[in-house]
Image (cartoon, rainbow, N blue to C red; front, side, top):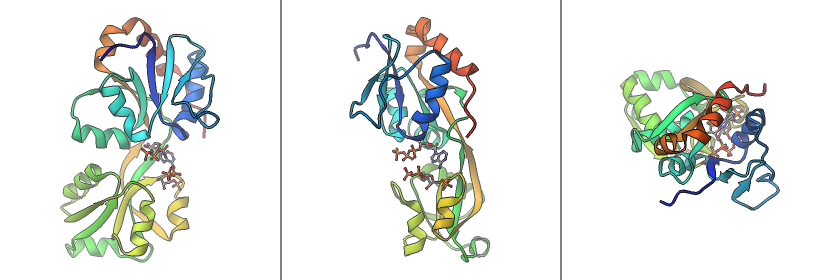
Length: 222
Ligand SMILES: Nc1ncnc2c1ncn2[C@@H]1O[C@H](COP(=O)(O)OP(=O)(O)OP(=O)(O)O)[C@@H](O)[C@H]1O
Ligand SMILES: O=P(O)(O)OC[C@H]1O[C@H](OP(=O)(O)OP(=O)(O)O)[C@H](O)[C@@H]1O
């Protein structure tokens, strides 16, 4: 792939973009257009040698691994799923402590999860995180049928598609609003900086100072 002369960062819009802005600012970098106000997928910054690609959260590792972006930011949930299918390709040097949440198992309020597990029932589990879920239940010795969904996981137990979900929980508001309860934590989640292995070697002079600045930046409270 031809190397772009600019350094390229991959970010997803929404919470990761918003929580990254203050970290970039602490590194002296201002993003001069906002993805909510612009249909552009390549955003300029106050530095001529740095641009930002706006991609889906679960696509950030792909852009970085293939070198279309030199570095990016992705949640541990996304990185764990990705690494199961693409082992070893990404350098993940810094936990930025942003977009903090957890992956949890949740069921309909009133569903006796412990009893179902004790009785060795085969559980139907709907999730976007099929690898995380498969590993979690294998560790517990629970038989599961995994149903892959791409969003609105909370709906699945309400309409009989699944007994349980594995999904992101932060305030718990989405679960409550849908009559679900979290019954088990799967893993804590925050977002990490990820870096293309080749870029780390060939572009160290421009990349390393940015990585250092991220390492020392403090996330806003939220
Ligand atoms: N409610 C939340 N609170 C805090 N962090 C969250 C929350 N939901 C998701 N996250 C974290 O932020 C990341 C990005 O979430 P976001 O909702 O922007 O994308 P998505 O809709 O999950 O991804 P995609 O567009 O690929 O389907 C997630 O991978 C997770 O690490
Ligand atoms: O525990 P809570 O604080 O309610 O957060 C959990 C919700 O947050 C995420 O959804 P998000 O708001 O990002 O919507 P989306 O995934 O559909 O974009 C996630 O998919 C959960 O549904």
